[in-house]
Length: 176
View 1 (cartoon, helix red, strand yellow):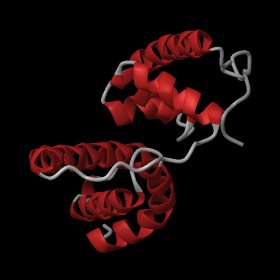
View 2 (cartoon, rainbow, N blue to C red):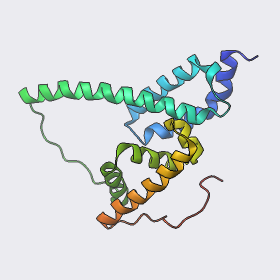
View 3 (tube, helix red, strand yellow):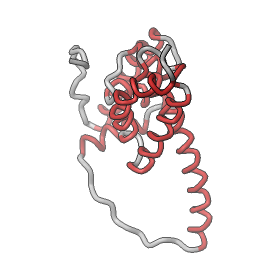
View 4 (cartoon, rainbow, N blue to C red):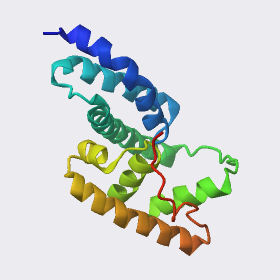
C-alpha cells in the first residue's frame, strides 16, 4: 500500500499545469495561484481518496475552491462599495481586447453559468463528456446532452452578435 506522500508525489506533477491553466482562464493570476495552492492542499489531504484518473476530480475541487474565493471577493467588494460611496476613486480607461475573444466572453456571460462552465470544461480544458460529468457531479449521459444543448446556445448567442462559432461542423477529436 502506498503512503499519502507517495500517492501525492505520483499524481501532483500531472495536475499542476492543467489546474493552473484551468484557473487562469477563470480568474486573475493572483487568485488562480492561491486557488491552485488550496486545491493542491485538498489533494494532499485526500491523497488516499484520489481516483485512478485524478484530473477531473481535481478540477471539481478547484471549482469549489474558486467558488469560495469568489464569495470572499464579493464580500470584499461589498465593503469596497461602502467605502467608495464615501471616497470615490478616479476613473481609468481600460484597453481593448481581441474582438473575437470579447465576443465569446460576452456570449458566455449571457448564458446560464452552468452552461458556460460546461462549455469551458469542454473547449478550454478539452475534457470528454465522461470527464465533465466527474467535474460537475452528473452522469456522463447528462453531460453529453447538456454539452450538445450548450453548444447550440453558444452558437445562437454568437449569431446574435454577428460572430461565428468557427468550429460548428468540426467532428475532430479534441485530444491527440
